[in-house]
Length: 401
Image (cartoon, rainbow, N blue to C red):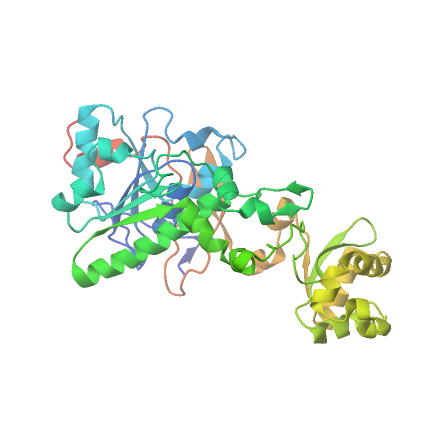
């Protein structure tokens, strides 16, 4: 990775807008009609790898996700997360001249990503069936709630609604209260699915010279992620029980209270670890022979009794002391962090995972892309203002404003 002055070097651009350096997707141009999370998260990951991403927004307001909160120097927390390293092009696509301009740009693009309302791009003449004859090398990625066919194809979809439709809410939460994910997990699943398939399509086009269409569904993306509980409940078997932060079928595996009001997470996967835990941590070797706790399945069934025994021991120690004992014994453990704890996480600091990116309101901290290959530059370009790149893009594509 190229690091300058303690920060990741922001990738420079040539006059044609391509990213210099050795980023894997340098030279790939992506046009994105995107909003909210799924589309922007997909294309930000493409931008991380060097793709040029032209984000098409409404004049004035831009992506509606710019205004959901003002927690980051007056900017939206969702937006700054998913929109760095992009160019903002403000177009009113209801106006013929702006739609014509967009089509000129798409003609020179490698990838078109869109997560607008169902049928929106078709009405604009930007559906795949139209584009594939005009631009056979173009990769078109449509992201929607339920896909382009089937009885749900026109149904509106938001993250929480897909969490519900996909069965996620039926296995998450406590027995008396389902709980949604604290993050936009359905959007993230769809954005990740789209990202992966676009990468594969770029490779495939390199072999065949042909583009393709990707029909990415939030429901199908979440259904893939829900495969374990689906298989667990196959042939009419009972589904995993809602068990809060505990594991539904393995015990002890989850949060336990300690002295001083602290909480630790621990997990055991086998009988060897259970024996070590009883002897070295609880100092109750007799529990190994206790029939109530003789196997993972039985311990899970009797978890209420076992929790009481464990917390009676843990209450005499502070959370950090318990974590230290678990680590020494080789028992998997974790601190129950809040957001302040994640910002200050020593592992992220030790691995130099933080840098800064520019925004219209100043510099903000940002995590470097996870898993970047050694030897590649890491791209951390600014978060754009609405329409910031209109003039330069119009000039480049010879569009008369």
